[in-house]
Length: 494
Image (cartoon, rainbow, N blue to C red):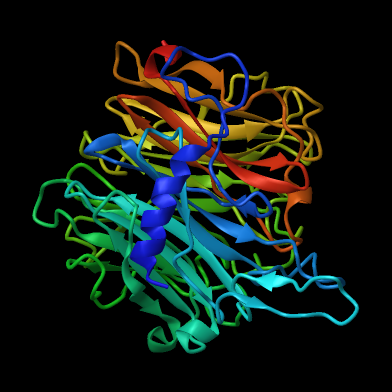
């Protein structure tokens, strides 16, 4: 069926429902907690958020999706769309209503398979899909939105491991081309592909509109861990040769969790993890991890590197893929209005039973860094696990989102709350913590039971605009996790 037709019908329908939850609101500009997805039987997680810089009412978010309808005994691992699938969601009214679309396809598409002795046939939305995953979206200042997803050796992609990109010129209502553009083909790259991201140059400089993707090697094959970048100047249709972002051999962490951001001067920043070769993918590592910031001032052709922090200790979160899976997931945000301003935050383990959200920032492109800032406003001596940090600038203010369990026992098995805190400049120009606001509607049960056993939820999303601060997270609703959104007005943070 023609995707434009499907999108048009869906766009007409998606205004008919909303998922606003009850609770105290910060004026009429507060959306309350909104359920983003229109697929009530699916679980969603890993939800970066993006906003149109020209129109703050226009938003996109994405998710990895699990459809828990596969017959036993494989149903904890495989759903109707494989191990996981992807979606893109768009809003035209500041996040109060959302349109759900499925663009990528790893398998053969929709299929019903009758099972002897069963009253009904399970429906597969993406039959024979393996893993379609790692989605992201960004906007430029020319009316273009971009969506990408990764696919692991799917039939739809001729068995290749690829990153595919789509473009929308109508704020996410329709996307093209139909099968997308291939940004990365691991077969051509002669390595494996893991966790692609998008970033776009909105600086107005010589590379304005340039679309970047970063990706990394996978920890599942025996090859040295590395981080890469490439770019497109024609809206994703063609891509530059790949440039290596990190350096050395077996210096980068096996699972480096690299992520890009572009500054006001067009500088491309990529944060990633550096750890010794003994930090293997599936043996828990408790030693120090080094956070590195790579910076390119020539449109991604060459990079220089600086150390953000050299004594980072990972949090062993149940939202990682396996208990021993070594990850340390940082957040990065380059200020779109102030050249050289860049912030990096991460969850820092403080012993086995507690962790904090730490942040450092630079105003000179990473040459010098602030002291560590302990972001959360609960007592540091209290045992409380913090994770899922995300960042967004608005002017000279930096907003930080995270999840913690201060309300309910502090452990990863405890109920959690979603928080956002503002950091403001003091009289000397340094960033200092300001007011924190709870975005969740009270404490929420742990989400790990609402997904398949291979469904990590490692990223949340945050944007800050003149309309307010918007956060996305995954929240348990019955037996599944649903994508949730809330926008709170800027005035609430005063």
